Length: 304
Ligand SMILES: Nc1ncnc2c1ncn2[C@@H]1O[C@H](COP(=O)(O)OP(=O)(O)OP(=O)(O)O)[C@@H](O)[C@H]1O
Image (cartoon, rainbow, N blue to C red; front, side):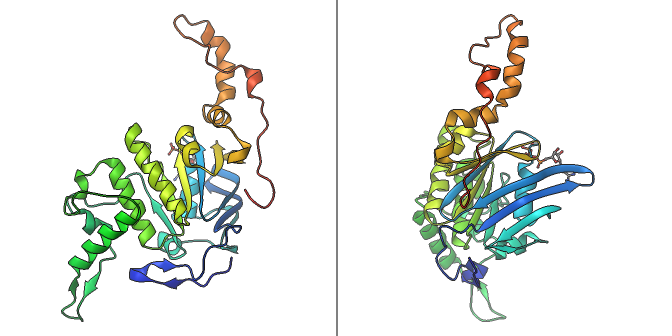
């Protein structure tokens, strides 16, 4: 898709036409990143389509953070290609990524806990009224807009005056998602949004991930949790030690296979024999080595 984006409300980037469903907004081709002589990521292929949730799974140190830092403009790739709307890019700041409509919601959300919800919604992009030098914050308009935007995403909070710090972790994530949608994100990167949450709160966040997808955004959902990924995911990419171990769309992989990939099934199977010697360890549920030789599923050409 070639797009001449223009700046919309309050610096928001507005796509000049509806996203083409078959064209990826963001694409990595054989991308990688080395920190000095440490190769954190290597040969990664990834496509992020509008109206799809692309899940990136991986254990600690798999390279998930490195991947999102490249896409969000914090780091630059050192190998392969990174394309946005089919044109090669190399962001030097997160602002450049944002200008292309790529917004990132980090786990440790950048909020001011004592400020009201509506104030945090507009943090850094406040609405103002009146001419300079008597320009002032348009508080009423910001409150009304924040309320409307949260409702549009199906998020109903009792009181937007309450300090954001008093909301639950899940609610704060939801406000951050609604904010990114309002400010014109086309791609939303969510860095382990459910990692610190309980079951119910995770469910709420998953609901808004689906809502963002239904609003046409391409969502990159980073997670350790295959169950959470499978609830909302259209595409699954599993990273292991910096390379893509699995790259499959929903109809190509079952939850069980995804869980095995994530659990390091091969390593567990290899350990099964040793664990069986330890008294009190039930190895019944662990996979057999032979069960885990399923080939890497690679997406068909055209649509990853
Ligand atoms: N700034 C850095 N300098 C050197 N090595 C780094 C740097 N950042 C990451 N690494 C290394 O790159 C590899 C991938 O790390 P990364 O943080 O991307 O993994 P991750 O999947 O996000 O892990 P986690 O879930 O623990 O955050 C690791 O071996 C890590 O030690």
